[in-house]
Amino acid sequence: MIKKIKSQYVVLSEKTGRKFGTYRTLAEAKKRLRQVEFFKHSKKKT
Image 1 (spheres, rainbow, N blue to C red):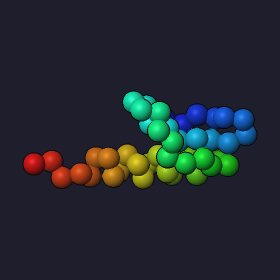
Image 2: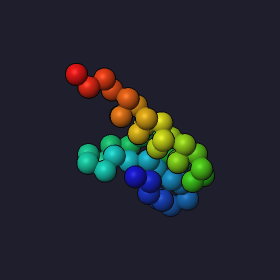
Image 3: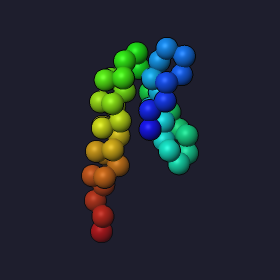
Image 4: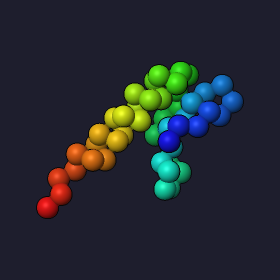
């Protein structure tokens, strides 16, 4: 999830609240969120 804190956007985990980065623009934050989601779902399930 992305939250706006003061003048910056923060990418956070919905479950744990862990930070995945702080960004100046919403576009940068969305790009990082896509990266996190990609790697979360790309793990091999056996």
